[in-house]
Image (cartoon, rainbow, N blue to C red; front, side, top):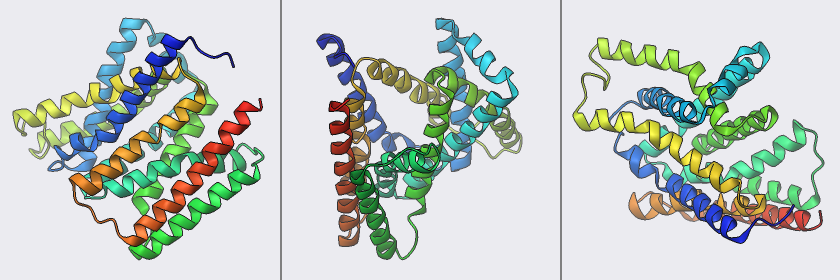
Length: 297
């Protein structure tokens, strides 16, 4: 791979860093909505994200790609499955943040790269190097320690890692531009989300027509909060090496972890510290192995 032009690479790294920092800080945003049911929050996110994404694609002439993606029955079914996985990820994340489990959410996103490695082995039948197996084993041991510490499964972390890993696998197979795919996904689920929001409004239970002005503003803002970082991410990803992007992705869960401990005062026991240390060890091994493999290409 040819090294990108230095000014372009610098701008790309800055854009990607800003996005991961934003995603790390986004629990501050969701906490403002914790008085609203998590299912309703995700329904609003579907609807207003679609509005923002359609506006963006209309401005850039990308709507034809959405029509093509959902016109074929097979690609539409795959897109719908991806949409369900993404909506599950959004829902679990909002539940985790607003139930005081931000640190567990961060754990989930630390696990994502290793879930992707497992998917590559057992779904795509890729051969794993010994260091990759070591990374997975260390992470698995970390999860086992956390199970003992919590006296139960860290289901928020596991669902986040599993849903995002599955979603990433489907997106990898589709090879469709990110904004186009996300628009198609939200388009397929929005009728259900909008129908439920209208039913809640008619029943006097939802935010629409019943909430405060700030609630309405926060609901509508879910559109740009979802769409704009993705555009910035796409800008950055096109201008920097994949290995650099892989390193920067750890910025987001690291910021979330710090928020959970130092802003929201969530407990960080010895068991959790050991668990995170084992998972970080696995990630360090995985990252070092990936960098060495790319240098040898």
